[in-house]
Length: 278
Image 1 (tube, one colour):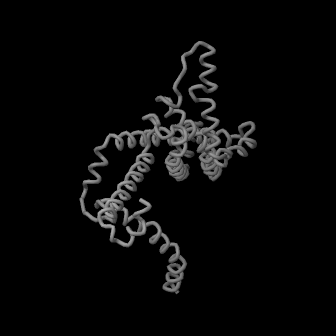
Image 2 (cartoon, rainbow, N blue to C red):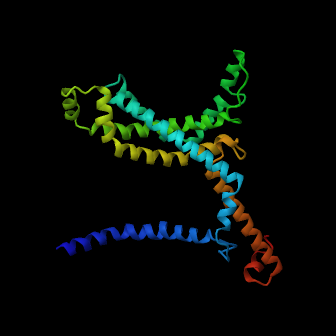
Image 3 (cartoon, rainbow, N blue to C red):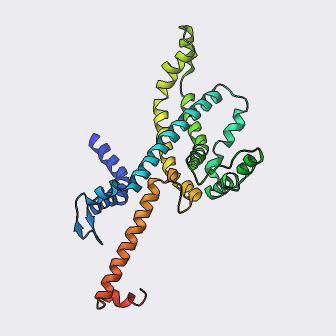
């Protein structure tokens, strides 16, 4: 009976395991293999030369520092603010029912339209700069200067805040009230309950919220690209933009190599068909 259950479980899990291997693990292994080679189709083995070139470049170092900074600051602020609001809603904050309805609204709004609104307010000739000038304050380069990082950070928190609140609020609702009642009988105060009951029991929910926050932080490349354009300020130059640049560069190099081969060896059937197009 045990062997039959194991076999049934393996058969049920086989499609998922097979799909994971074919569409995730195998392509990842191929990418790792190609990272140690150079040329079209991995023609030459170069060892760690590709890694040395990438890690020693200023563009990678800048992108890595900005991405790490964005992750640490953004995810931490998101968790702290979300947990604070979740606690207030758990205690019956006035208007919390209406607040729950609008928490997930940022997730369904098209990001392009949101960025357009941000640009209306924070552009060089935007509403905020006009207001600053009207009160005698010098204009601020919100999107073209170091402040672009904080604009992007605020946009990330606004977009991910509601989802984190929902996750943490669901975790708070799973904590039995008997624990707090017993602690109150023993003379524990609010801080003691928070650090001895709430935070330890919320650890799995914090972990899930942190993972989702990291995922959403990497997705913020779309916002960074729309805010900064092709030539963003250094403060919002992320790893994703560097990868896109390297991918475009690799495509151009490969296309140039194919074109060079076709010019030199026009008797190749593929080149005969495409030489005129090049």
